[in-house]
Image 1 (cartoon, rainbow, N blue to C red):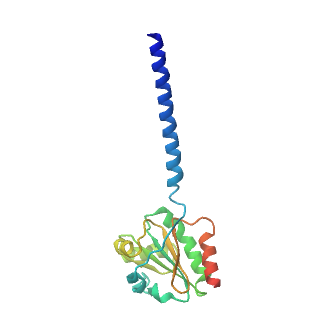
Image 2: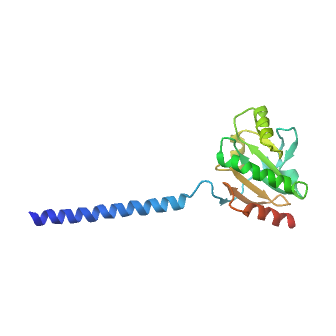
Length: 185
């Protein structure tokens, strides 16, 4: 009987060890593949013909349009003030706007919050955001752009062709470098 108990105990040990190893490998793969939500992912840019042709009025009363920006490299950004990564990214977008606006570059931003336009305008003024921000419904934007999360930024070249979609906050200077390369052409 002692032999049988030893055999059971040995096989239980190996089964338990195998399960533990499988769980550890599974966790490592899951964490490695899911990654940090703040990191950048490349996705195809999808802008429906409707959103490209539509004209919008931003919260400051300026008329803006994705389709009427030919001749400019255009950064189209989708964000929410309830998204910490979006709020973190806003000062950088403002810096890009301050640095490049008027020299073949523009930004159109879509805010997806369920707040009044007046509340959004106050928020932008308090945070010194001056680039165009359109206040619209998340459903409209998702239907016409197929964004999967915020922040998301689409880069269009001077001819209005989609070049790259950044999901999350771009690492380093990747987005800035792309914008500058496109502006040089």
